Length: 119
Image 1 (spheres, rainbow, N blue to C red):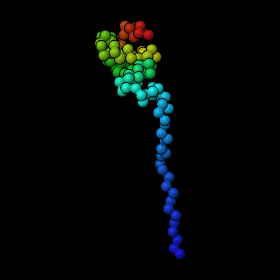
Image 2: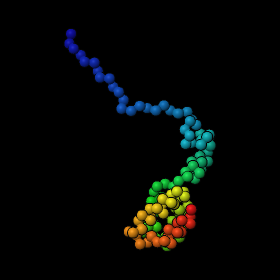
Image 3: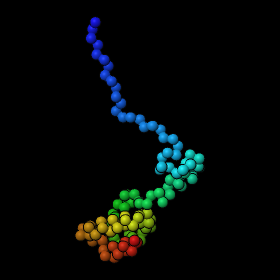
Image 4: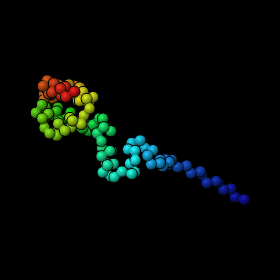
């Protein structure tokens, strides 16, 4: 009788997660499957869900202010971005600007004081 090797056991490279029942995911609002799409959109995009702005927003504000200085602080786009930031993020931007001050003459005392006044 010829020798036959047993087929190697196949092990999947990943395992499939079990499906969660509706409402089990805490990132979705309660009753999400029963509300309108517009109400779900509003609930998911409620600013209270996201106490901090995206890092790209922080980076954009820091770039604008280090490049253009105090005059840019009054621009509507900069004001809109600043309104999205938490106090901790504004402090981070101030610290960043202080560190970068030797390289960027547009970072002035007045700029830093105005930013500090936002806290």
